[in-house]
Image (cartoon, rainbow, N blue to C red; front, side, top):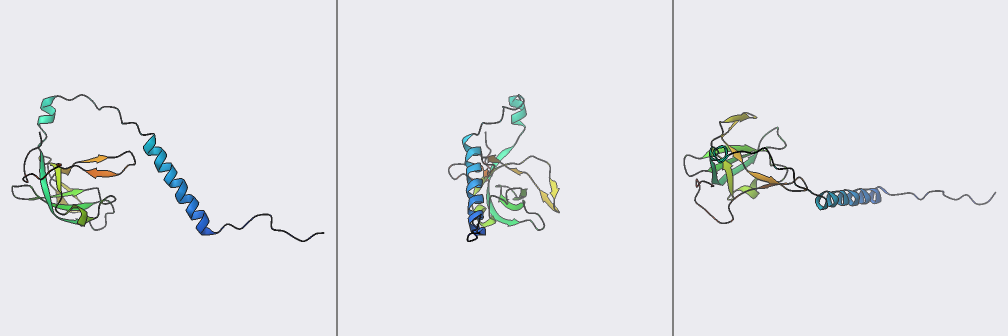
Length: 149
């Protein structure tokens, strides 16, 4: 019998982790590169659209909602009395990133109670090819409360 040899090389955890990260990055790149938009939704009329009161507001305060991983509580200057909107964007934004930012929101949804907070509207966002949500707002500063048309 000859000298014993290792049949397999030991692979360190750090090498495995680096390979997993590389494969995850490649997977995300493939998702983005192979993105095709969803089909256009059901037809609606101008009157359907006109019923939505879409406005611009400035975020004056923002905080994470306790016991909720996905929710942020935004205080918005809407040019009127101010309002609170709870939005499921905490995975993509830290609260301090949104303070001072202007956002588009639907102002005429009835209030909905989420995690004990009355949410008075819905912040609009776009879902990118990689699943990331991007808040929608004007490209230049406007007065809080102006309507989007």
